[in-house]
Image (cartoon, rainbow, N blue to C red; front, top):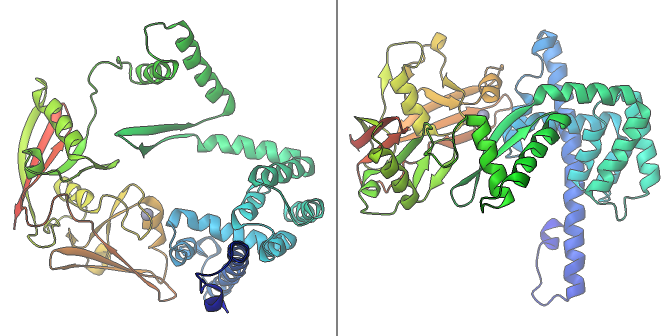
Amino acid sequence: MIEQLFELDADASEAQLRILVERCEQLKSQAAAVQARATALWAAKRAAAEQAAGVPVRRRGRGLASEVALARRDAPVCGNTHLGVAKALVDEMPRTLAALEAGQLSEYRALLIVRESACLSVQDRLTLDAELNEKAQGFQGWGNRRVAAEAKAITARLDAAAVVERNNKAVKDRCVTTRPAPNGMVYVTFLMPLAQGIGMYAALKREADVCGDGRSRNQVMADTAFERVTGRSATEPVNVHLLLVMADTTLAGDDTEPAWLQGYGPIPAGFACKLTGDAVTDKEAKATLRRLYRHPRSGQLVAMESRSRTFPKGLARFIGIRDRTCRTPYCNAEIRHLDHATPDRDGGKTSAVNGLGACEACNYAKEAPGWQVTTRDRDGTHHAEFRTPTGARYYSLAPPLPGTPVRQKISLLEGRLSIDLVTFEAA
Ligand SMILES: [Zn+2]
């Protein structure tokens, strides 16, 4: 039936195509509902099996969120949300689940309702589920904001104290994050308590009000934020520690292969050369040259090994450059740990082949019973295989270095005050 649905008829009328678009949307919601039921049942079966096996309560369910995420081809960090939403819909919000199954709610809108009511007791959540669905009558015409606002209002009425407590708890999650923006720019995001955040924004606006030097208000605000956080003028060159990996043919201007800036991503060759040029002409800069080796065919770094149980600095740097981000499929989070794929206690070596870059959550998940990670070097390409307790296998390949594999040297320029120029040569 699905095959039939997806057979697109080139002669279909616009009205028929509109119906097909509608039907597909309904199917996506239906699939999300079935996926939630399957996820909740999976969690229940895992819990029962662990109980039967005598696993202590605090260790039950470890790693399951990552398994759910991998099965959905999503980042493991999203696994807890998928698992939590599925359990909430199935156990505590039957009418919202029914609305999802009927295609009246999208998966995202069902998530908004679960999220807004997360601080409620099971009993209050059941009440919210009934009240909201009664009021919405099929959610006809309700957009994302309306759905979230109505759920929030009912939550606040049912248990105001729980909402206050949740707000207080949220303060714990204050943080600063960055993510790449186009054209060599970056977004810096502050998550902070409302009063502080608004206060900070107001202070920047006041600065823009009194400054009349020809810069735009937005420019003054961004420059002021930089100056007050770093204590330096925004017009001075920046003292930051950059880790830049580029082919030395690019550095010499022979080609335009993009370079890789650790913590940011690919950057155009011209921009990379400007960064390195600025750094090299700086009198305070110290440059040292190192050599590492890259595989002539795969273009990856060639293995290193250490007798130490922990990864020494050079090997850690090597794995960090090779893996770039957490190696769990779909994760891409920043590397926080260097992990022995085969643990040290099982005879795993402290080597580039057995070492893997991992984020905190993934490192923890793979310690759960039934997980197995194996790594190997196949013709210069670093492979990792993740096996989960249900027998699923997921593969992860280290990304190739910048530059085409035929070119054999790679330069790595790091820092401004301390420059580390590393050349990679063919093994
Ligand atoms: Zn990860």
